[in-house]
Amino acid sequence: MPDQGPPDAGRPTFRQNEVEQTLLGEEPTYTRDQVAELANVDLERAQQLWIAMGFPVSPDPDAVMFTDADIEALRLLTTLVDENVVEKSMEVAVARTLGQSMSRLAEWQVGVVNSYIRSRIAAAAADPDAIRSESRVTAADTVPTMEKLQNYVWRRHLAAVAGRALSVESSGETDTVLAVGFADMVGYTSLTRRLDVSELTSLLEEFESVATTIIARGHGSVVKNVGDEVMFQTTDPRDAARIALELHDAFADRDDVPALRVGIAVGPVLARFGDLYGSVVNMAARLTSNAHPGTVLVDSETADALSGEDEFYLKSLRPLRVRGFSKLRTYALRRNRDHQREGSRDTER
Image (cartoon, rainbow, N blue to C red; front, side, top):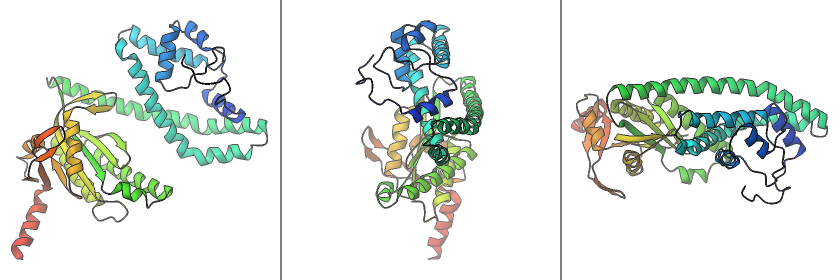
């Protein structure tokens, strides 16, 4: 195992132990050697998977820190490989991605109920028996509900992603071709220097909430949120275009949210562990960073896909010179009715 410092480094407090034991549902009874043996897994492999999932490792080989649930989880993970559901070369990547996803989810969940948990535990701070009682009550109140809810959402997303995958396979396409879009808030970095934590939290929550609603309603899906930016995907470029324009409409007349800029590109992508990779993703990001506030830039593939649609107006712009792309052809996207309205105003003048 890697050296993690002296045995006492980072040792949990009594209160932390109580909360952890309550949330895990059972008291730790095994060492790492015992877990590997009972799961019938090589110790080195078990350690590698444990670290990949993002958990700290005790430097003490005799530390009792594992439960029956850990043994079962190790068996389940290695069984996926043993039964050829997951390739052996992908085992650690699967563990790492699962760990990272669940870690972010746990951080969010604790943040949501943090004030409730802290107030109840703090009220019992002077009494070990009360701490134990309150931590159990807190777990009983929140964990089952959170667990059922996340299981429901996971199954719904699993059904949706599986449906999209089967649709692509039945079409006969060898590559996954998607419209990939980014939308980000202009001037976010400077804005963070003027806002306090609560104001920044409200801003991000509003942006993510509105963006997610528009993307889902527009037959797309959110790939990820990164601070001031949301990345989304659709199977139809027309849906991506409508989403981009609706995002601008949603924030156009609001003083509490900065103007947006959006970029869209269409092409083959690599979908891996919930994220997208490839030149199309890089192109969409470059288009976004070069778009003016309140505008949508698209690549030539997107423009070709939208060219026969009466609802859209596309204006060819000067090619961009950006790193990784030589003379990237770009088009400004608007609704046709908005363009016609602006044209009528210019004629009247």
